[in-house]
Length: 186
Image (cartoon, rainbow, N blue to C red; front, top):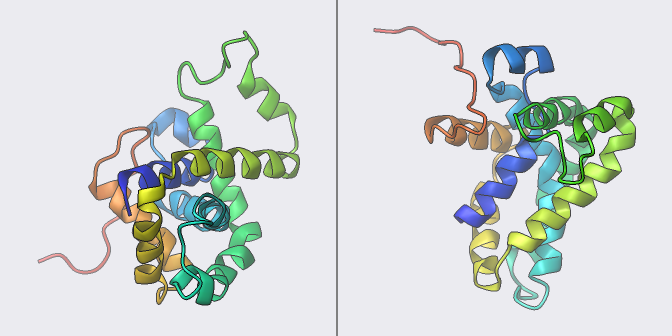
């Protein structure tokens, strides 16, 4: 995936991170929440890509032939992934300077006042628009190739893989909380 595609996916992943209190204390996002954000955002990103690349994708390419089969488990997992994705969104909203939109309006207060489920359509539309605007025509084939490469993985593994890549890339806006050590250390 290109850097242009990774940034929106990370932003989408920002829809699901550590609880607000945890985020304020640790200033990091839980890998599980970031994974949920990817699962939640993948259908939005898929639809945005299909729209932005409509005249660039072939009728016999992966998205046309196997895309709906690939994206179905992500769509099915969106409800379950929403709480984690919402925690990521709140983490990004808790960043200094993120609470005002330039008109003096306190976006964090507005979001806090709205029920989580009422925010979903707003978040979906905003994220879809952000992704579509970032997609350049010459990246359509690369995006399709990337989706085809991860298509054999279950949706949860795709989310966890992206969270892992964000963690090892040491992305700091916000960083991924350190994962607990698993397995035996030698």
